[in-house]
Length: 304
Image 1 (cartoon, rainbow, N blue to C red):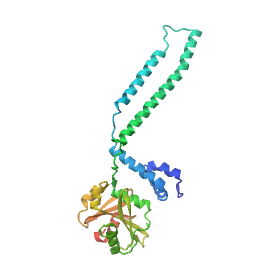
Image 2: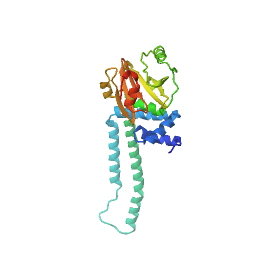
Image 3: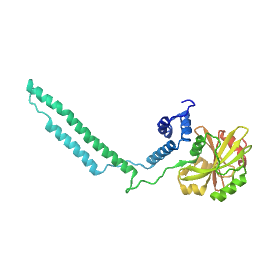
Image 4: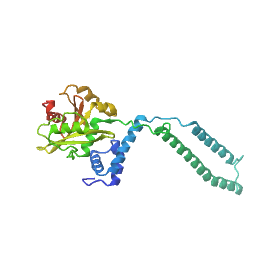
């Protein structure tokens, strides 16, 4: 693919490999670049991820209805009976024109019987598929509630890759940490600490969907000396519990107790640093090593 942007056809073909983690890093990056500019393909990608999650977590193998099983048995019995009735019976091999005529007649009827069987089998298979789909996706005539689960660190990575770790236009544009805290409290009823980062410029807060149906702020910083951006996502603990489907890494939850505690998780080659201050959970990501990134967050007081 080189540096050339994917075509829409190529992007559509990559949806399944990306969802199944079978795409190469190069393919994944090209795909993420494409869907950043094409919402229709992004929507198909998000839908496939959600569908895969629902099927893997909720779908169960079910028994076909009795009526469908009886229909299949009747088809089998009917075909077996017709085969016996139509089959020619010979006591001894007979040579000559009479035998040839009978053989020719039998051969000509065989394709017709075979085609009939294929049609009946196809109908039965279609009914089985309809029954299976009905069992998977309906209950008392309704689709099951969306119970997809998401992971904080993995979606922090997704957002970072979506924007290529570059500048994102802030919802709250300010260089003042204090002003950002006040606007978050006033505009979104979220009391939080906006951390200071060593040698970094605060660019503001991007407020939007972190995962479907769950919004969270992204604090954005820039290191001029390295021309690198750092994203820090913040989550209210009560909102995480209420939502119930956005999960944190178990080791991070167990490790982050005191204000100076933090956890580093490697997600596809990027380090996500997590910590907790009061009732706010933070997840930071950049192109830095996890220890280096943690050392930039001044309140963590970490010296690598």
